[in-house]
Length: 175
Image (cartoon, rainbow, N blue to C red; front, side):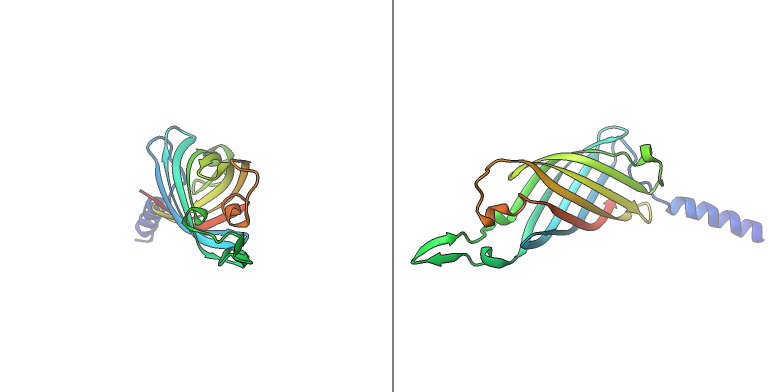
């Protein structure tokens, strides 16, 4: 009886075990928080596997909390000195490319490391992310994002949102 229970336990554990990136046709949805200087917000992303180690996707972020002078703006003698962060300053949309190298590193089947590039409304940038799955459908992720080339070099403080180093942290789901 103990042997049968042990075999059932091993079989069940193998079904629960997730795989971080399965290659062509793999789909991931991520929801999390975005942290950057003077702002925190929400991040949503979707990735689709094109090959064994390649995926493309889309990512969108919105800064919910903005601090400092860019929250309300600053006026001096009726002139706006520091621009208030409006919707377009708080919002970003990215098309992204990932190189999913978790299976190359062979750390764990549940772990994926994915460096990548992105074209956003604000800049051309890069990111390095990691995912770890606790089951076949649920895991956690973190990403470090950085601009490589900004579309505008003379930015006001509100325009620095998503044009600076930022970090995303949250949950990832297999679709």
